[in-house]
Image 1 (tube, rainbow over the protein chains, first blue to last red):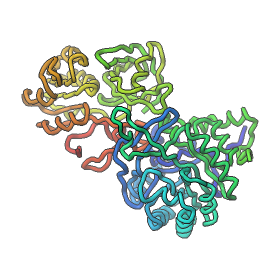
Image 2: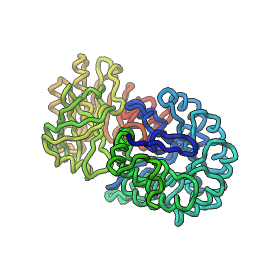
Image 3: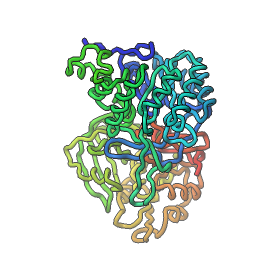
Amino acid sequence: MVNTRVELCGIPLDNPIIPASGTFGYGHEFAQIYDINCLGTFSFKGTTAQERFGNPTPRIAEYDRGLLNAVGLQNPGVDKVIGEELPKLERCFSKPVMANVSGFSVEEYVTVCRKLDQCPQVGWLEVNISCPNVHGGGMSFGTDPAMAASVTAAVKAVTTKPVIMKLSPNVTDITAIARACADAGADALSLINTVLGMRIDLKRRRPLLANTTGGMSGPGIFPLAVRMVYQVSQAVDIPVVGMGGVTTAEDVLEMMLAGATAVEVGAANLVDPYACRDLVAELPNAMERYGIETLNDIIGGAH
Amino acid sequence: MEKQDFRILVNRPLAQGIYEMVLVGDTSHITRPGQFLNFQLEGFYLRRPISVCDWTEETVTILYKVLGRGTQAMTQRKSGETMNLLTGLGNGYDMDKSGPQPLLVGGGVGIPPLYGLARRLRAQGKEVRAVLGFNTEREMFYVEKFCELGVQTAVATVDGSCGIRGMVTDAMAQIGPYSYLYTCGPEPMLRAVWQACRTSGQFSFEERMGCGFGACMGCSCKTKYGSKRICKDGPVLEKEEIVW
């Protein structure tokens, strides 16, 4: 029997598979078709202080190895998440959940994190400073080391839960942002968020997405994600959660060899709702194929 | 929702740019007319959402229009081949609201889900009338199939090549009282029908989707009662909740 257990910021995970924020809602759609307790955990939909409708449609476009989205952080707001979504989740998920937080100001990040800090179901706060689809917030915090550090420090000051800063790939040097977050007290980093992209409708001669640009995800960004996880995990001493186009159990192993302690899976959930369940089931087989007995041992093995 | 493999029985052109595909598989997750399927296609990342036209215990029929590379690729699939589908997606039409004399209004490739609805309403003994709109006669399909169900069917074509020249609303104007309205078609048509509709009704919408089952928030729309996901809370919305 192989051992798939890993530990993320002191919290044990049965396996490193974590559905990524924005592709798993608050868990209910998936809990209706399989027991989501098989997952390591999951990162719930990016949550802000107030309810947000998000961007106009079309919000979704496609490329041959993935999709682009410009949802724009649609969510019911933190109070409804705590009052309605988490109680519903409690009935179908017994593990600590990763709470994904977004904001348009340092104060908003602090407000949302302070409220989620009070929720026993929440294991980690994943702070998104990398959303490419909203203006005047999100990614602007994640593209400047000083601003990234200020969000990190402010959030750390209001919670005792582990804080994972979610980084953008849309920067010249991701290790500079990573170091700034680590120095400001981040407990872990997760990367990569989506890659800023664009498609144009040939018939209309206009951008396909109503938001003009959107975030690319899917297998087409996997090599970029592996490279960045490899670089960042060498630049900092805190755990890295790897994501970006992960589709197969081999991709999970590759991400961990690059330096990931756990692995988030995003786009794959949208084309196959059973993707993460099947990854969890397939992971031990892939480990056996590559002679891996203890998954934890291969983290950063390619360094 | 369920993910299942279906085997293609028939895949044939029906009218200009319109194909009919019949597939064999477990249809038990399809519970209402107006629901849709999400088709996996080799070489394409996202699935393609297509409405259910009709279904039996063993087969499901879809009618699809060639609009892009994905639907073009679907035309090349042969009988005997397997397709992976997500079935039982969307809320579908609520037939309990029809009253004794429902009116069905469909435009182009919005017509297919109304066929399955018409067949079931007729089985309940309802007096069903339909207005079917097309661009032109060459793109017409299923008119005779509606008539065979005993549905009193009016046709409108934009170029006047068959039936009334004009829009479905021009044909609606010539129809007597009805108890309820069900419709599906392009958004400008839905809006015109909404304005012309003299009863309550249900409107089926289309949007670019990511997942098709409510996870990604790609197809959200605003309604009077907050935001709804076209794929999961829709595609059928009540007339009274629609915000244009």
